[in-house]
Image (cartoon, rainbow over all chains, first blue to last red; front, side, top):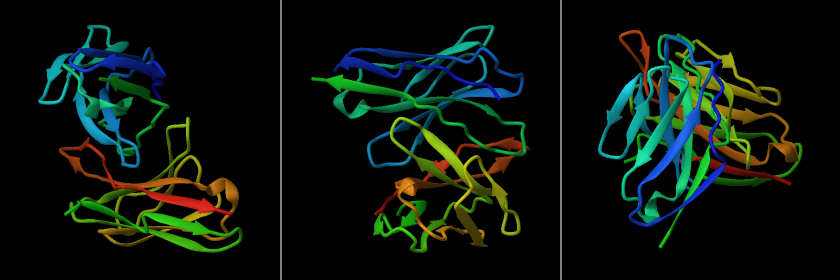
Length: 112
Length: 115
């Protein structure tokens, strides 16, 4: 089971780019790096997933170096509505178990 | 309409009472999960089910039981509620495609207070 480490909190201002880094030193071959977002009083919501290099979608980009021991979630030009907790997980997509292990996440606060 | 719904959204109960939290999904997924969230602790898995006849304990199943009544319904019961079961409870669903575990979709949560 790969454990992840990410900052407990981050602050930013509207319009800035935010990068949240996650460490997963024990990542396994079948593991994918996955990020979820959670707003207050809501369930977590999938943002992005990647295996290596770079993945981009309409919400964020995910950068994964060649050794895959860390990853960076990049949120371009954040707004107040991006204030949320962001969870980094490593997911064994080849496993029949399908369990997700959520840590404490990173509380991102965006200020006007 | 929401794909994963939970009822009730909020519940206050007393120590020793039996309560049931219900989850329904319209995504057609086989896999369903119950998580618990406490402040500062992230989410922890209580029980999960991969189909109607399959029930598995998660990391914190003591004091809880579940029932998978149908593919679309997965209920969590607290047989005798205690104050440290006060938490936010989430139901989630997922599917497997091509042998690969897919994204989990979460419900809106049930906030439970045990007095």
